[in-house]
Length: 292
Image 1 (cartoon, rainbow, N blue to C red):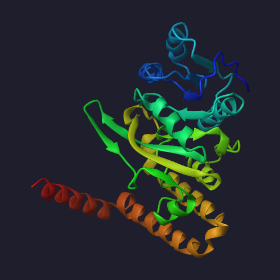
Image 2 (image 1 turned 60 degrees about the vertical axis):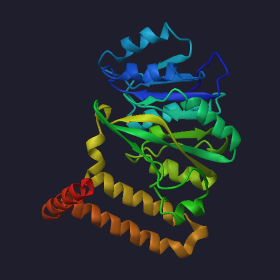
Image 3 (image 1 turned 90 degrees about the horizontal axis):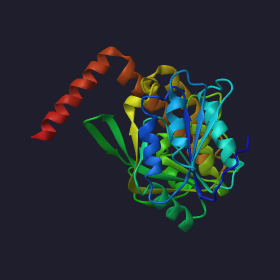
Image 4 (image 1 turned 120 degrees about the vertical axis):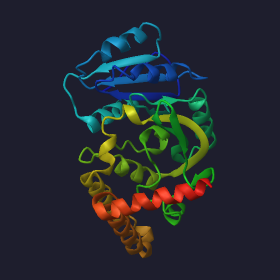
């Protein structure tokens, strides 16, 4: 699908939505309040609430907002891929996904474009971000690495590959020149197969600057992050990614052992009641003494 964009802004902000009436406004406002302009693409997946009506009021205020209404519900990941298709068929250089309720800081697009233009060989830009638990509490989520550029070998050595570097999609920006027109795998719930593949093509850049906010309460599927099936998927997609590492054959078995070990830790931590109880007690004792 192709959309006729009226200007030549470098970045496209893609917002796939479904029943977003309650929280979509703050997401749109954060996009409009950027220090430099970008195009804002909203793809509605057949919402049954007042989402489209609310978005339409903003279409009249800004020529940078574009609304696409699907004729049928494509499914969650398929709707992300529709955003990607429009991006690939456009003249934009860079892409950032946002989801209902998420926001970006005022300098987000400007800072992102600067980094891309100074590092044209990267496929992904990751930033630190605010994780907003509630209206009154948020924390900063960072990677445990220094700011800078990382290749695949370095990500492996730091234990971030596969699937442990990208985090929520909102913290990622993408460079079309290094993406090779790949799409999300519609057979999976998560985004790991997509981001794992991108760092096989080109380097990744991490900035410690906080550029966005992840809104937990706006995520209808957030509780599924600890579902057994989702974690089975993470294990499976991680092993798939490792099997493709022809240049790192000596590390494959070690990486797989670590994945399986972490999976069993997850089972003990979340799915086995006695160990879950013990884990929570230890955590409370730890934080009690930490405050002293």
